[in-house]
Image (cartoon, rainbow, N blue to C red):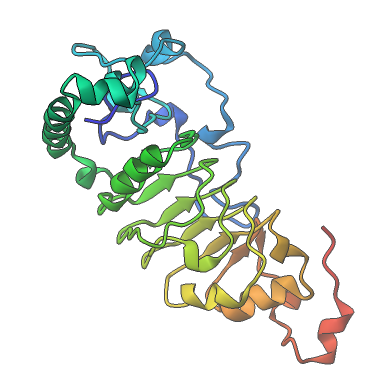
Length: 270
């Protein structure tokens, strides 16, 4: 199993009901109101894992915590003990190659015991992927989420998820990452609600890649593309089935063709 930031093994259980907030599509908001989601960082009651909050990296052989008792499990791996205690030259002199092979074999056996494939609801936000090997392990886990339907990936500094496929994902929250293009998104053929606020997406041309999906609501607030001329009309033109953009339902003026003189009569107040 993968380690959490507290050293607790995470499972594919969903997070607690009290910390889940997925509202139905309505006329006033989308399921991605950042202030109301569990990603706001506000936890009303302490979880059983709170007592491990400030401890250093370690592995707990025995514990009474389940994955559904973690509001936001960390799946990044910590550095190996030999890398922390001695430098690479000492590792080589002390037979480090043999030790490393043994560790890799043990790690592989542990990964075979993971059950990410059975996960349906998952929050993997705030992972703090500061090292390449942590990002590699994170992408490895995302590729195994073949049954996930609701996935939160808030504030992970993610740049490219194009190698990931989430065949059953209906709700995906990528708020506050470093995505620069729609092409960098994971493949989500069943997506219905997508949040991309506070990224670096500057072009709307690639929105057509989502046209074949059943996308109903999209959030692009605080991206450079939001300041393009006829922003809303362009989005709805690329995505005819879209019902809600940035928390605002489709308006009559959003359906005005871009070539029509009527389009110049409307302005967007941000």
